[in-house]
Image 1 (cartoon, rainbow, N blue to C red):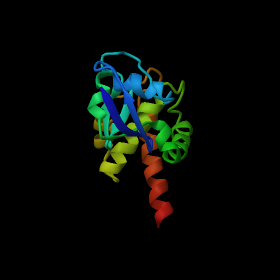
Image 2 (image 1 turned 135 degrees about the horizontal axis):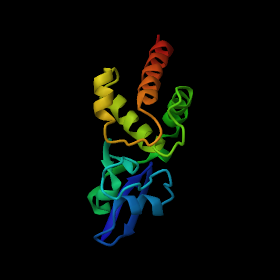
Image 3 (image 1 turned 90 degrees about the horizontal axis):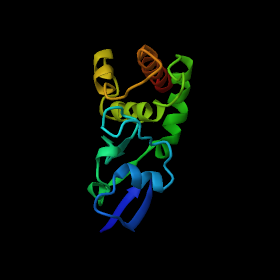
Image 4 (image 1 turned 90 degrees about the vertical axis):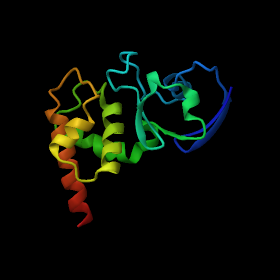
Length: 154
């Protein structure tokens, strides 16, 4: 079946098998930040934005993205570059494996809710598993990032 979508700002039109996952599709197009850690939709490592909404690409068929915009970490480099420093400063990137999904979800959270409470942050990021931390570093990083953004706009 012919699939046409926009991936990180680039229009792609390609014949894809009906059962191909969005994960396999974006990886085949060079989006190596998208990882598959569980193949059961339980870890959040494969998170991409589909028309701005986080989806788990390992359990989403590529054809579901027909006519839509798919954004991966590669398409969020400005945000990732800025926010990633806050993750490092707060000790939230010990191995870095979960960072792409965490950054994509944080971006989506802040687009939806620019001033989230701690509980809203925890709830939004609940599907992102991290093997190294207790998630407090990620929470501190988001809080510090929000303060930075607020002060930068003042």
